[in-house]
Amino acid sequence: DAMVIQNPRYQVTQFGKPVTLSCSQTLNHNVMYWYQQKSSQAPKLLFHYYDKDFNNEADTPDNFQSRRPNTSFCFLDIRSPGLGDAAMYLCATSRGGALAGGTQYFGPGTRLTVT
Amino acid sequence: GQQVMQIPQYQHVQEGEDFTTYCNSSTTLSNIQWYKQRPGGHPVFLIQLVKSGEVKKQKRLTFQFGEAKKNSSLHITATQTTDVGTYFCAGLTSGTYKYIFGTGTRLKVLA
Image (tube, rainbow over all chains, first blue to last red; front, side, top):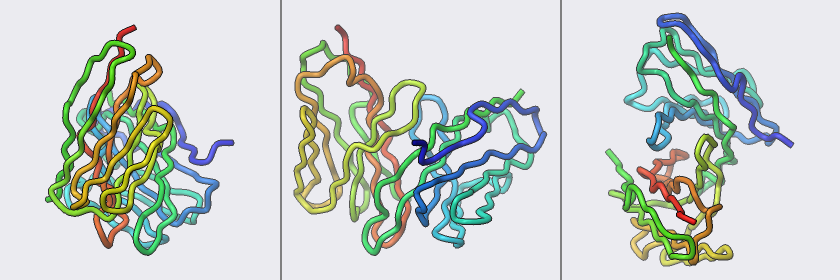
């Protein structure tokens, strides 16, 4: 049973053409994360939601936006993709707690190609 | 800013040899997690360590959290070809829900 689902798995977009990646979860976790992972690199946190509270990383470009309309869904919008934005985008969820963020469950990722 | 470094960056071993990757944080962590990412796949959770000096074992894998909660290690005994992948540690900054991933160690096992 899929717990964190990402669509599409592969996305090709043109330089400058807006694109939206989606993530849904069946775990009812209150924390959702978006990571960017480039080849042979570690996942890099872009932003995360704790419930409806949005937390942006200081070095996340303004070109990247996110929406979380409800607990189950989270979207990553790239307003004007550049060639440097080609990467794997990973969505993850966790059940937030007082001390620890809990186990992160990752989706399979969306591989974005920019032409 | 906070950094989490892993060494080595790459490791090639013969099947049956042991393997260790080390994770070092520039700041104290409230907990640390380990993930395995197969080539072309996504990170898969292996284990979480919370207590200072904690040691946990999963079959051939042994995980350790340092006394100062700034470093951790993963040791694999008698590697198998199924152990191939990149191993990441991810440290949780105290008081936040933000994980900082280590730089990763890519393991190749030669049959």
